[in-house]
Image (cartoon, rainbow over all chains, first blue to last red; front, side, top):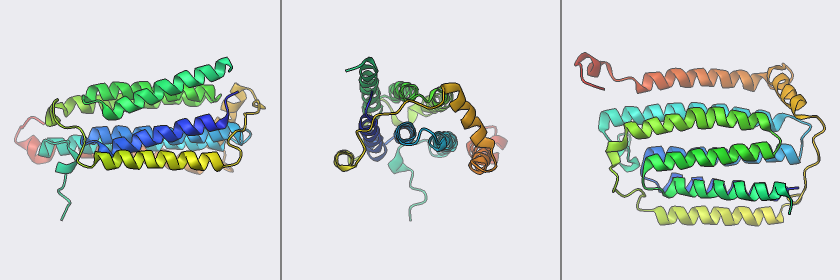
Length: 102
Length: 179
């Protein structure tokens, strides 16, 4: 069988890759992709802990489903914001979106 | 080394490579396609974890909805960045350092945490019973009906919010400008 630590290490690596994407990319859509990777890593952890630590309680899967719903709404609103910003300012570079900076 | 372990290692390698390509690929459409591969890898891992329903939800929500949404947005906004332009910001080295330090810290923590070498006990119930239990738990007043309803309200709010935010402004429409 696969030890739990393998899943945890993979999820940690996936999270760190996503973190790099969020911190380093200039394109806002790419930043959103990094966030999706990080959410996936968290979901993987939740399901792995459910399977290995408490398979009798369904809470781990319920958590994962709520994360799915939050990820879907976050992606929808985020991409709508990006399209709106692109329409008004013709840019998707994160450093150009500074209308709220004083 | 059993077959399951080999499947896990192959899937993990594909997922990690795809995730790396997502963050380093200079072309956004390619990054979006690599993202689909990474999400599919996570779906396979859900199936390996005997959470088949979550694997299907992963395919339906992430690969079907979110990835398509991202690809459409990439295509709509493609001209803004250009193809040859710089894709990373000035502090990308710091970002890489932060990610590596975080990964090292997590590895250190995992190596010291007890029980990380535990092996899964076989599921008491079969797969169908697990899905049934999940469905009942989500609508049971004593269990998770509140998070379930909050999630539905959140989805509705996101739906309306996305439509309102992405609409062209009224002046733009009055002038007959192409959105």
